Image (cartoon, rainbow, N blue to C red; front, side, top):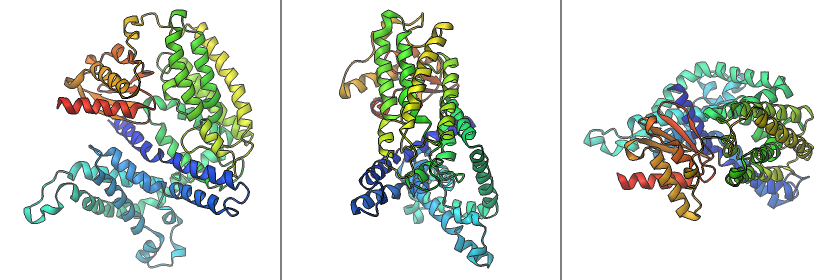
Length: 486
């Protein structure tokens, strides 16, 4: 139950994180226009940099709104508003000046933890509280005299009251929580390149269960004082150090994984190479250009766990190597070519082109390493399985535009067991997240026949269908099917 809740939280975090590419584009272009003055020598550059900074600097608010919306049962706007209300209550009540007033002391004497009450951690916490209030009170009916405040209008009010109570508790425990988060961040930071490597290894290892987003928030945002993404794009910190929890992903996502895709294509059976080529080409291009790796990783994650473990180790090694040599670049979304180009002119980037050299080396390691392991241990990567359903394979959807997604959605929904079996359908950036009544009614061959990269069963009633970056369109079509049936 806890794992399911954490997975839902991780998915909800992706909504505010999806805003980061806008910040990266604005700030990246701004720094390209004025790479030496950082906006001081060009009003246009300053305008773009400040516009991007407005997103980065307010990630805590975006987390509060995004988590509240994502964790609410029907994704209603009043939940998002309540997340903002909750965040404003706690950050105002526990601000340095407010705490000084409560304690009857000067602001300078207040515990410094309260100066950091507006962190992404508090944003996430506010969003969770708001979602709980929404799920509990959004359908409550008050007496006629108070009926105006019934239902969804009641949610922000209850959230404000709940956050007042939470603020009372945080007044006593926040200094300890903040100290613990800072200590954790400092411990990892003190490990230098080794710490970056450990993070990279765990980042990949947690992807199958969807908890890597929670881990990322510690290193990428201002949860434990690291704030690697925010500091990089604001060009704050130490050159060669800021960006160390991002840089090592570029060699893997732009070079390593596409090389692995090539190895899997070359080791596929001759009669299945055409089918595998389509999958590997699409997944490899997505990984190189955008840094979206899940369609490729899920293609071998469960079919060949040994390969995925090696991939996690190599990712850790890549982050450690980049950190060791102080080669840094950053991303607003993921470590693909687009973000790499945008980050080149960020003043704090350090020898970013060396990541290309590192990437070429990792491409060789991935290609020959994967090819050797696949053939040596006869691993069942795409195109090598003995019991593939050839008839089902022939049914892979080849249509374009809206009809393609409609066809995919219809087949996937039928494969999930249809209306009698599907409880709920949601999605993150690349996956459909589905709750079903009976996993035995799920036809995995039918689902895979639509051309999806993989399927991940994460619980007795929870299944994920990895679609790719077009997942939103498939999810919308499934929702249309469910709406028509109901």
